[in-house]
Image (cartoon, rainbow, N blue to C red; front, side, top):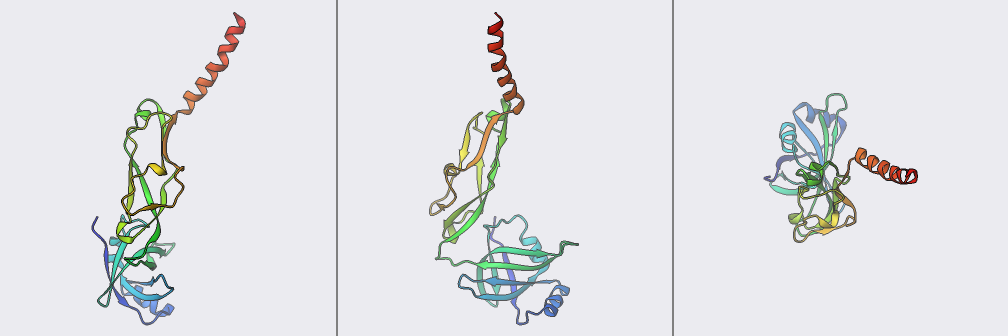
Length: 203
């Protein structure tokens, strides 16, 4: 996926009246927050933003061009109108290219496990993990192929394919995906175990 770039303008006035004028003009008021506590007020085209953020995740770094300067940042918060879903305000968090950062990266499961084809059930309790790395090394997502999983087998966080320079922060023992017997089969197995001693007692 190519990096998303937004063209923005400096916003001198930050009052509610100015924000309304910006929205009426088809733009969105926004703020870029820096690592040192700085805040740059901007506004950007509403349609460009709506189309640009489709498919990106919390760990996707976007570029924001403001008066010839480019800022690399995360989309940290998007405020919407509760009635019509219109974007009212956006908060960006700026990252520095030479400074490590911590971020949550989404985990995507794909594939049809062997264990499921044999009657098991696939469970995927974990949907994202926390990592630390330089911005250039940050993965947008982590894809996990579960096709080879058999019944009673699992994949843990420590098994995930992290790229070079990416350090795992989340606990390695957390389960990402597992295949287990269907509940009905488990109950049937227990009933068979209980019935066996009873049968032996009658003989």
